[in-house]
Length: 196
Image (tube, rainbow, N blue to C red; front, side, top):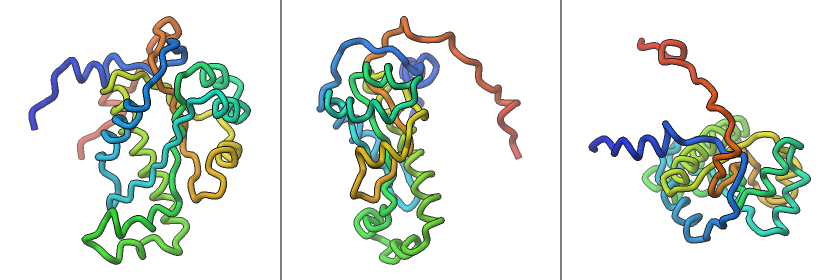
């Protein structure tokens, strides 16, 4: 494949920022659907695809989410047009006959193995969360991924009665650049990498 245009690289990485303030501009449902339809193609182990997403958008759902947030994240979450709850389905392996059909035994790699399930669900839903952020940026949306919430409260409020547990949250919309902090530094190649 050819390298993508440098302007696309800038949009996805170099100039993209984590936003804390948001313009009062709604995100239409068709864009949320397009976002998912892009991110779903990112690779996961045995195509297990454990991420499950709740797009919190309505005032009632925001009110339910607000008490789950840490003090520092509550206001910006209430003001974001959408907050995506990136969850992980702890029963993801039940879908493997559909998602990984060329190996009929794939479900048995996980069934009854809680440590393998937990590690696979966390690793791969986190990968999918990264794809989510890149897909959102590619569609012209800004992101504000977060920890800083009560996971048990989020699970009770939004995932009760399911096998899904929250991984992380991501505010989504059109960021207000006035709310950006100075960009934090990153480690250099020499500090973070080695070639073996």
